[in-house]
Length: 129
Length: 157
Length: 152
Image 1 (cartoon, rainbow over the protein chains, first blue to last red):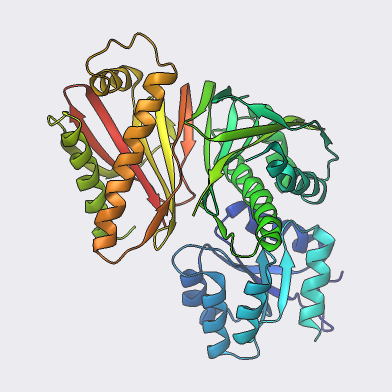
Image 2 (cartoon, chains in turn purple, green, red):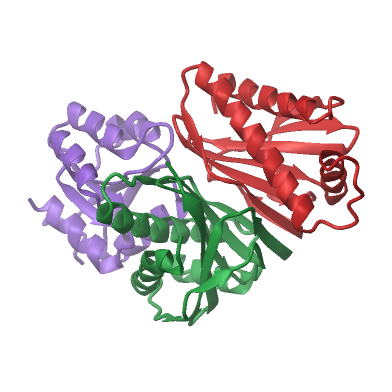
């Protein structure tokens, strides 16, 4: 299965999105391939609060969320751990968001809607870099 | 506001249904709408401000909503009282409108249409009324049932 | 939602009701919304974008809606909720939202509003935004009404 590391342990993923349905869809895309959804958060602040206790291999992070949005949360997480792999999920692929993300050290995007295989491939691509 | 304004929303609906819900959709022609229409039972509303002021509506039967939610999560839903059906409807409308306004905003720099968070109304005999907005609809047929999209808006600031 | 944003909405509604000769308006309660079902047949929704992001829904039974529309139209009887009374109710919501936004602006909070949409139905389930909804209850001579505020 694609979601396992060389030693057989699962790649650990944290899903952050204000829609419980999207979090479920990330889970549904990844778990059959052996990835482990180790944590979920419904907004950027929650993600930042639990992050130090989770330290996932990869984070999927929605851009538009209440309280603290995805770019702020991702930027803050990068300050704690510059090596943290983060994939931004968005229904809006404007040039503006990409530039803002780049300035915070975030380079990876996946647009909604995503097919399960797209999510698997993207997480693997980012993890293996 | 002409019926052509609904074009990007139609395109976004077709691609979202294909990519997210794995279903091909047959689209009808844009039709001008009067000040109100009757919902099929489940309507998601997304408010628009900025360059356009008004609403994007995604309208379908409750059965269709349950079916689409089921496609998204792999579970079965029998009623819209189940929250995941409401969340699924909101997410579908969110993605469609997000994709549509990206295209529209990119084509007209400075237009800057922004979206409010989606809300869902489900019930019987619901009529959706707007005052003095230019309203167009497109009816589409999907494997899960008919789906109507409606854009009712006026030029903003 | 931060409590400091609630008062501008309450004041906004009271201001407009007073201006429209419905000065019997009184706030009767403030609570978190517990259930998705609503008995209120008439719901007028306005979207908010800016420093606050979400939706406001004025929610009322059809009888109250007709009474308010009648008062707004100079006491004209309103046997059914057709285009004229619906337009009046939309205008009411617009004014309430607009007045609330002015209050918010004075606090340094800038918000743009969408035009209103009026939904009229039975046995409805409603989910407003995808965040917790605050329900402010009011009563006036025309009947009871609620203002639902769901902002991030």
